[in-house]
Length: 460
Image 1 (cartoon, rainbow, N blue to C red):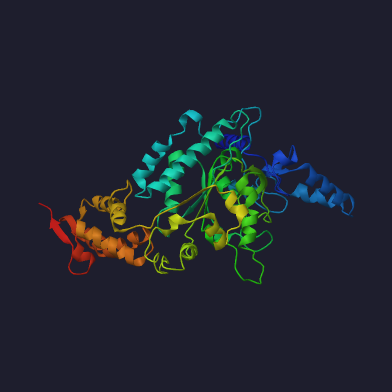
Image 2: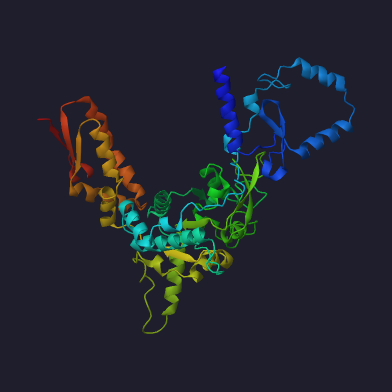
């Protein structure tokens, strides 16, 4: 008896916290009006119930047979079709949290609690090495955005959103910066990939699916999701295709479809799915206070910039050599809106991303710093793993430089560091648990360069 009471109480609490969803059309109670409750926690909206009555009245059905069938079925955990009540319940991923009526909506971050730009940058410095300019731009943009969200208005002067476009080579820290930023601010974050987005009606994710991911990250709380951050990676992959005769369903059309999201409007969002065609509830999310950060490597953008720079002085005695900028690693920092338009980004899309900045490629010194300085540095992770076996792990300077040099050769940025260390730590992680007398392991440059082995010191 006590267990039954506990179960019914938990269900009542769920019903108070989440909206009721129509079992037929999957619309929430906030859109349909008061639901009609049926056995086994099934709810039907008035529209679907009326439609059912109309179908019954317009068809020849023997009501006596229906009543006999229903009377012969047990409603204790089973319905008339033989399905478990658990199977008929709406999955938790598709439940919507109720909007509280009458209560004043409070922002996730209060005006007094918003950290100043220098405080945000100082926190980012603990986790991200280098990229000082990018961290400075992001700190100011995020600070201004959440001031705008917290105040909602300022003397009838409406402050526009500070959406960002970050450009940088692969492995330079674009995604890691956004993840760290959202973690520091404690706001919902959704990371979407632009390569899977297509125009409505085609195979692929709908454009609204990026907002659906944010809603899921906010535990289906609409008000919380409306103040979150959406990071759209690989944004360069939706550039306008050049000289194509087929319909561009994953390029320019996706940019045009994202305009209303970036600017701020009410969007019909599927709950718990990436497509509106799925039988899932739909809810309305306003993107006015959602901060959009777009990032991409833009691999061919360097050639566009070089072409523009070479045109400025290509004739006469002062002409520049065509290969003048070939070895310039910071050429992306000279990007202009004209370069991005020539790359394939439409002007309307760029106009809704007012904050544009670039990240520098990682050099050898930065890679060495990434290995050992951040709070969750890769070396610290391995040292902690071996510390659980009571073994001390050390890397000498020659080993760090050798790892950085190998990472530069792979040209995948910081991502190469983990794969290189995994390769050289495999044998060590395999052999150490065999011998309890090992007390310290020192990784040397000769071991990384395959000219020798690690230094192993025994206990005592």
